[in-house]
Amino acid sequence: MIATIQPSGIQGTIQAPTSKSSMQRACAAALLTKGVTIIKNPGNSNDDRAALGVIRGLGAYVEQLPDGSLKITSNGVNPDAGEVNCGESGLGIRMFTPLVALSNKAITINGEGSLLTRPMDFFDTVLPQLGVEIVSNKGKLPLQVKGPLKPTAIEVDGSLSSQFLTGLLFAYAASGASDVALTVKDLKSKPYIDLTLQVMKHFGWDVENRNYEEFYFAEAVVRQSSAQPVSYTVEGDWSGAAFLLVAGAIAGNITVKGLDVSSTQADKAILQALMSCEAKLSVQAEQIEIGPASLKAFHFNATECPDLFPPLVALASYCEGKTVIEGASRLTHKESNRALTLQQEFGKMGIQIDLQDDLMIIHGGTGVKGTATHSHHDHRIAMACAVAGLKATGATTIEEAQAINKSYPDFYKHIQQLGAAVQITESLQHN
Ligand SMILES: O=C(O)C1=C[C@@H](OP(=O)(O)O)[C@@H](O)[C@H](O)C1
Ligand SMILES: C=C(OP(=O)(O)O)C(=O)O
Image (cartoon, rainbow, N blue to C red):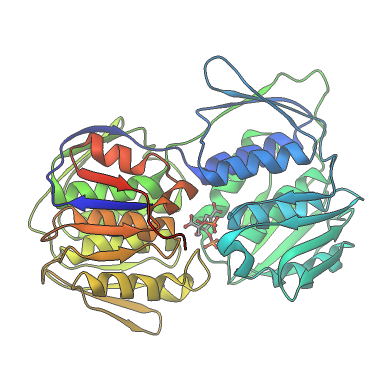
């Protein structure tokens, strides 16, 4: 699919998409909760659908209620097949693998697309220490796992990704960990662990976070069979909304609704970057208003919120001067090698990006040129090019534009509703 974005002004009000980080965690928690869970405001991105597929495969029963909520009935992890598929979701595979390992059945865990090349060797090192047999394809998919996992006091490395820890935290809680601490070295993407702990707490599991270095499970939680259903509302997505907010800062006065300003989501930090570049911004409890202003280069550390790089690069392209973003080394193992794909695609649009160790330097304010770009099958690259195209000179085309379905399937529709001229055509060649 090709998306063509013509230079456009935007205006109006839009509802933020749902957060796949919040939705996928809710699916995991619902699977582990014996009884009924109601998930309100559920997402329908590809990653969300994959999570629902995984929990179904692990024994949960999922029904849609008339108001669109999901009713999930579970009796814990009871796999009904020998394989689960996590689609393209990094969080999905890293969170669900320790949960699959709660069962004593041998299960194959597989995925698709970019997930096939993302590193999973963490599990080769860690799962055997928890009594789990694992065979991986040299640290990549597919994984074959046979539990049951025994929660044990071990130390793990958190420097590549927080997602493995999210999976272990859920698995320890669900397997009745008591008086056990999980020690973590050099944890990155810490706010994502805040979100994990928040969802766990909502479902009744309390874990003591000792400065992101130790996570202590005091006692096992037993849920009464007579307990009321747990109801969880999926949060609005700061990661997807960051693209809308940047679009407003570049191309017109808009209002974004449905975001919780007290959320633990990492990408809420987009607000700091928007303030630093002097965007016209008004943050209210119910909505965020943003509009164009004369934008200045800024300095921002995105080590803990790596998914902000793509929208920040689109923003920095329109900021006068050199913007410096720290944390570029966190981008190597995302859906694409994002530091390089941003450099390449924004280079085509006339924006110079230098990569120096952990720094990304964007030379902004030099004019963005509409041209042919490619998503590299990465949803956030597609959305960054689309937003940058709103005030480019001439049309911007994005090849493999359907990559957005991974996190924000309504993205093109939403910017169209705000007045952007977006045309969607099928690609002539299949690649
Ligand atoms: O837990 C999550 O929901 C996520 C954690 C982050 O990954 P890392 O912990 O690998 O940085 C983020 O990049 C990803 O999009 C979603
Ligand atoms: C990296 C991402 O997701 P995941 O790691 O869950 O595939 C993302 O959404 O940008």
